[in-house]
Every structure is written in C-alpha cells, then in structure tokens.
Length: 299
Image (cartoon, rainbow, N blue to C red; front, top):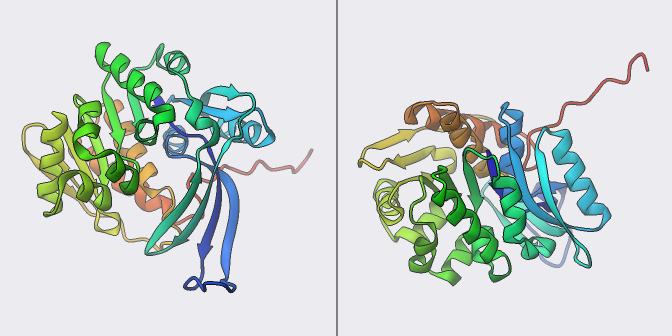
C-alpha cells in the first residue's frame, strides 16, 4: 500500500482551558511527527499493514528525525530530500471541541511526480492526502499519483484534507481531479464545502455520485456514514472512550478503513474497523499510535 502526502513536524498544544488572548493558557505541549499521509501510514503500519509513504522533507535535523521515527514505526519511507528547504511544520491548537492549525508545508510543496513513481512501483492501493492537490506547489505530484494509479487499475482512496483550502479551490475543480476514486473521505466541515447543506446521509450520497465511487462522511464522536456505489448506506457509531486529543483521529479512521479493505474485509466490517481505530486515536496525545518503548533492562 502506498500513502502520498505530507511529512510534518507537529507542535501540538492540547489546551486545558479556553484560550486566553494576550495572556497564558495551560496546555499539554508535544513536538512530534505529523502530516495527514504520514499519520495514516503510521496507523496502517501499527495495524500490521505493509505500507510505503511518499513525501518530501528538508535536508535538516527535523527531516531526519521525521524519517527515523516513521521507519521505527514500521513505515517504509520514500522521502524526497529537498536541499535548501525546511521540513514542514504545523502549530496545532487542540481542544476536545476541535482544532486550529497554523501550517508551513515547507519541503512538502516541492514533491515531484518522479518521487511518487518510486512509491507506486509495487503498490496494490493508493491513499492520497488532498493537501497534495490543494496547494499549487505539490498539485502536479498529487494529480500524477491519481492518474498513474487509475491507469494501472489500483484502488484509490482520497482524504479531502481541510475545509478552508477546499473552499479556495472549489468543489467542481476538486471533483474533476478525484473522479474515479474508490473511496472519498471527508469530515463534516469538508462535506459541507463539497456537498452543501443536508444530512450526512445526503451529503455522502452526493459525494459518492460526484466521484463515481463511494464516500464516507466522518462525524467524530457521532461515528460515520458511508455511501456505497450501489446507493446503499452504511452507518457505524464511534466507540465511547475518554477523549484526550482529537488530533489524527481522522487519519487513524482512514487507516482502519483502507487497511481492512486491503485485507479483504466487507464494507460493514471495514467501517467498524475505521471507527474503532479513530476512537482509539483520541485517547492518546498526538496524531500517531504510541511507539512501544524498548526495555533497557539487562543491557
């Protein structure tokens, strides 16, 4: 399986109180790896999948650390190293009610089609983060990934990424890029931009029609709705868990869904796996599964 998209350094501040402008707000703060595609690849690897990640990093310490931690997590990383550019970074302000992200995509903007080809060379499935499509700097690589996968008959899933960039691009142009996608994933805000007002079921059906495949609308604690190509609707509740941080929950959801599909699961089983992994993600701080700590006893 091949994931294409951003490799990022997350500076995550999980706020413990409402933000106090021009003053101090208590928070748990963590600096770690992020990026939508990198997060999904990490959750896939933690679930036992063989996954390669295509992305770009700077020739800097942050880039080396991001690649090293992904490799430690079991991800095969096909990283394009961009000399003269910094590894991307995001400041994430997280509460239990949502997140705000301040983004510098850095080297991710320089991802090339040639780097995509390396990761796709032996892939049986492509998962693309739409951040790659939504920014002009990386759009050529994102579109190349979709075109190559579809030309080879490789199943494609696309995560719609983020509502504000989608608004700037517009639904019609976005759909022209992702038409033929097997599964489009969108959260409630993204579904509103792409499908307009309506129930999640109505939005999912409109999204599925627009891409000519299927579409999932992720509802956070409300679970998810999946409109299949034949018009059937599947729903799944989220598992009730004590939530700590929602960062990366949608990326974990995507990993649960496409990992189960790649393993031959039925759509209803795949949707259940997705909601379970998304629920697991909100119980930990940060966007990725915890990496096991190796004991030093006896060394």
